[in-house]
Image 1: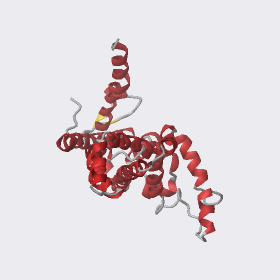
Image 2: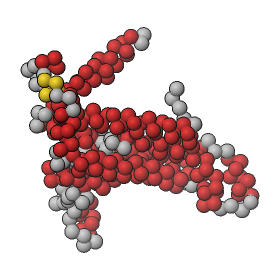
Image 3: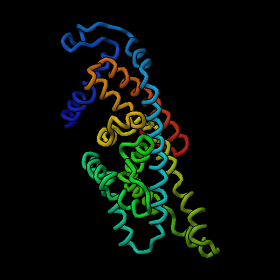
Image 4: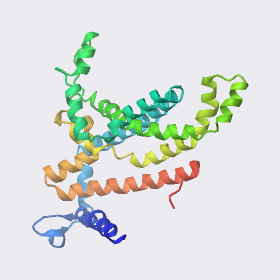
Length: 285
């Protein structure tokens, strides 16, 4: 019964890896892999000599790091606040509402955000105009674009991690809260001394595993929301590879950038699993 799954994995996951060889060739589609000239590390040297490369790497690390931090803090605070809500129906309603964006694609959300954040008739700028704030071009200003990406990504995904944190809270022994209450501890002190230590393993686990995404700033989101005006602050490695390969037709250079990212990501994933096992005793095998 596993045979169809194995065949699909080989065809769609391992088969495309043959294209890695393009990173070491002057690839010409008419000649194919076997007829194109072998150039060794020349494509990597060419990519490193491009003026945009350093900025692209910096944009990727900057945006991805902010997403990781915001993606850890926002759901944690939300889970702690929801845990203090006494009415279960209200708590479940909030969980459902904040979880819904997780199921929407960036194609849909990108269109919504473009309208909502429009400097001419977007609801956000209309609201800011009430307080005398000049219209802000969130998706066309290099100063605002990275933070717009982070906020919108956090809004889309923080509901999922909130559910994970709430599940961790339910695993805490209720008798600890009863004992603390008898000793006179208020809700804030109970949260600090019982809830947060009880959630520590899952917080450490999510934090360490997120290190593997330090070079994944979100291709779908950036590709849908960015424009040439914000290339300086919004162009990341994945969109850079897309432009090199499919717009400029520099297949070998694009493959070299993609291979570089894959190797570095593999190192970070290995480090994150080592830290997850070291601090949270989490392991796959």
